[in-house]
Length: 454
Image (cartoon, rainbow, N blue to C red; front, top):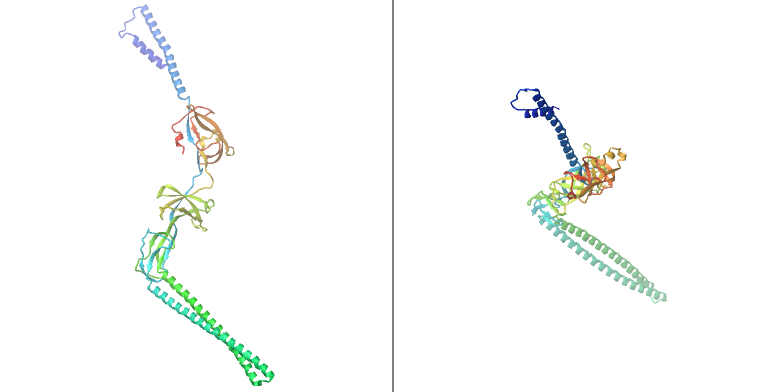
């Protein structure tokens, strides 16, 4: 109303002459009043019309801008609902062998350095072997002597066996003569004394045969004793050869030289350490796991290992060993994880992050904001079945379709979809107002496109 009065005043001023003459008569006064009323009527009639037109234009603009609902669209993906915890550890060789000297002597050769690769059975160093060679030669000489004693003993056995045969023949002859003399004695052809002598000769021959047989046994025992000495001497020769082989220090495994403990020229004793060899064909990572998480870990379980030295790679390993004892203070249990190192790129001492992979298969996981708000407000036991809106594009139009889904576990404002939604499908994450089935919508700039599907 104030605005209308101000406008009337402007119109009156505009229509009134700058020089106002006094009204001389009633006729002029009447004409002036009629002019003022005409101006006032025209002004009052035009104001409502202009306001109505402005309001109509504003309403049409609002209706034209809000005719289509804007929605944020996301793409369904499979993932683990709960994030796995990374355990920190350091890489170590699968095994480290300390190579030591097994003989006494001066080290005369060691042609390896730290980082050099060695193979199993490769000679890596040499010890002075003069004394060991001398011991071997003495043992071999004594072995030859023992073998000659065996030969002599076998010869004695042969001679004794010949004596046995001779005594046996003599016994047969004496027995034959005695029988003949006894027959002649009965016939009275010879005297009794002569027959008795023949009998005595036969008995003597029997004793001689027995003695020869015993001598054979004695000589055979001598052969066995000589053969035993040969066997023992062979063992001494073998031991001397073994000690001589200790002068060559051989790598027991294939690996990399991790440490040199001594240098050529030093005197070594049996048990003196020479070098350390690390087996890097596989790598161990030992992490400390809380006792609360131990029940979720099993030997042979798959794990994911990431190294800061190779941030773009994820290495699959396995749990090789779980320690039977825990730290009584921290309540942590060492768990040993083994990963492959076929390329030999992984060194010892690198920082490793171990993630114990769960045994459950990943499911489709979406944000809880996508669930129908009415369903989402109900109790958890009724959330197993709910609805979401799926985005469909056809004939240049984008529409939404309501679809029932079965819900699973919830965590961190996310929920598992057990059924009703496939990976790669697009769904409404949130909308500017409640949606209806089949409604036409437009995608906001925050929406994911199909090109974002991995």
